[in-house]
Amino acid sequence: MVMIAALAGMLGVLCTAEAAEKPVPTIYWMSVATQNQTIPGMPAGMPRGMFGMPGGGGPKRSLLLQMNSPMQIPAVPNELHDIPAGMNMGPSLPLVIPRQERAVREEYEQHEERFERERMRIKVYWGCGDTVRPGQPRIIDTASLSPAQIGQAMRGWSLSRQTPPAPGRMRIYAQWPNEQKVIEVPANASLVGQHFVHGNFSPDIRFAIDQAHDFLAPVEFTEVSGGLADSISFSWRMIPNSLGSFGMAMATTDEGGREMILWSSSESYGLGWQLMDYVSSPDVRRLVKDRVIMPSEQTSCRIPKGIFAAAQGAVLQFIAYGDDLHFGWPPKPKDPIWGVKVRSKSTGMLPLGMDMGNAGERRSQRSYDAPRDGNQPPPPPPPSSGYDSPPQQEQQEQRAAPPPPRGPGFGDVIRRGLFGF
Image (cartoon, rainbow, N blue to C red; front, side):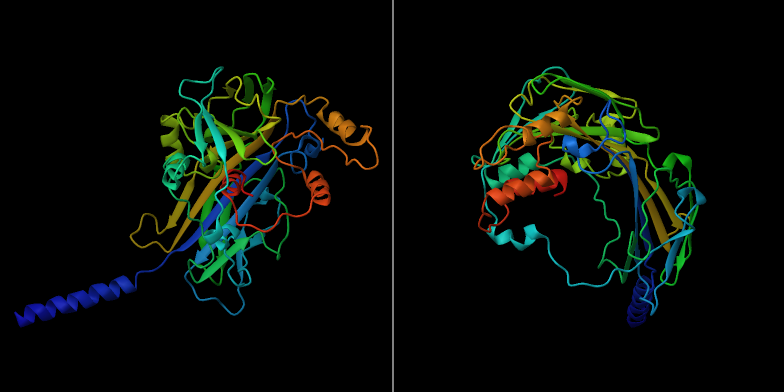
């Protein structure tokens, strides 16, 4: 018995040592995005700012490279991602370890203890069609719901958690873009070809990207018709190599943004914000079957009549999902030394219920030509996308004293979740 116990103890020690020596793989993610905010019939070079849409004209491509490595930080870190010539960005992109700074918690975490429960009322609609379906809207009213009920109403669809490399997860976090090489991704950039990641804080990582996993084509709306009180029809060009698409529209009915209207293209209830970013390919395929995400071959949808009748403006956000690509070495091992994930999306934005032909002219005349006396401030331009442009914000800040500091309210959190600010 003593001998058996001794042997068991030795086996336990060996197993523990083996587990302790199990290598931690280097993790590398490529997040590939295409953005476009053009309007049907609007020339590509026309500034979108006159329609309340941020940014310059034309589709844009972006790339985020992120690495977590278990290695020790070398005295002089040097890591490169050699890229195909079709990227038109030079031979390589450097991966840089950001300078360590004291971690700062998010604003909403800093003020968690003095979170203010402001009144917020949200009308939620869903589904493509001419008319509002029975049982809609579902109303979320924070004044009449308990925190548990609010949490239940805000619950979305079940999604796999996206966990890209991040500071603090391993000894090393490195990324591009960075200050070492500042360059925009060209509009004609292509990821197709051989990729080689190498340096002094990762193993050599080699993989190839094919045409099916290149940058997705931009979202191009081909038609939009109907005023805010009407059934609004919109259509778009099919995006090759995408797995599916999703649209959601938003408007507010009061200046404080405390009454909100949300609509999504899903056939089932949900606020939609969680689908406006990268979603894993298995989740996309499942949600297409569940009729939450539209299939890739669908190229049109109608927002039911009257949903935004009480709003002064509304904005549609749209996303198409690419197919994820995974690599690992050694192939299908028990203990890989590195793993790569390439994920992609294409997004677009479209103002709704506007006369695109002369919206910019109306804004200019309203802002500068309207008669007024010297003591009367200029009237604000008509809202076009549910939120103020920077010039309008500056005018409002000059006319009104800043409010006393307060913790974030429920509406602040909702707006941040929907639009990322």
